[in-house]
Length: 323
Image (cartoon, rainbow, N blue to C red; front, side, top):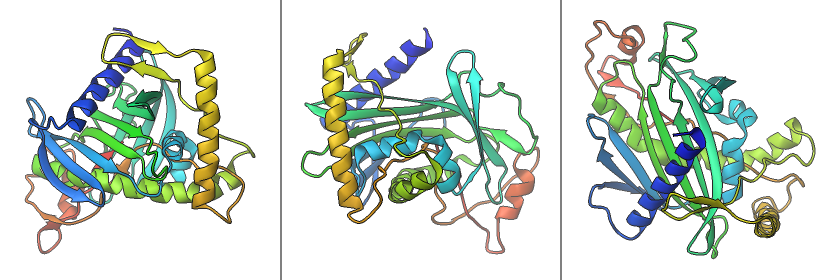
């Protein structure tokens, strides 16, 4: 399978999953809790002690296009992402343009992601919809070689976001998100799962803050008029065909998008600058809560750092990424 075929299959398969759960088919998902207007679910990953997570609900105070734009602006990540130590563009033989993301984490060994991000637009029940995916590269465990033995390469990561335009309130798009992270190393599975279930709600909060500050950042760091290009418009219909729409339809959609973007910007910044708003790459962390754990530090890549993570009361503060 060629890379573009793989990307299209991810779009299709996750869109089909979204349609099923939207219709109430939750048989394999376990409900966890609700945060603001977002429900959080999980299911056991086949052959693993780790879980996959899903969230569904209405976001707050974020335009759908701004959400996409911040996710795709890698320059901005270094400014707003608290745990971003290095972000380096690379070229992969199969995926093409990819990124190396190195975290700076307290207590545990830094994690390194080698991933790519793709996006498309489509329609869902007649409403404009964005599908944004990020995934670890096919050869991420070996290519490129690690620069330091004190860094743990993340062997598997996947995140798919489907954002549907809300006609009643443009600043409250309906967002479905699937994500899975295996951070590698020797972190206990229960700790990974505990932190991972808080990552999605924290991700939306972080994105909301990033969106609110992006306008001023862009005015200072980008040329006037800079804007992340909108992704291609594709029909994702559950078959083996992903069909591009014609140029006339694409042009009309772009014009509507620009009008919507200006309106949402005026609502968020009634007295702000004339630059448009946008959002960045989906690598986020949760630092909420504490968990008591015990470690077997023998033969552990994380041993030296994780031992320091346990305080006198046996409490540990966890950090796990959601790229």
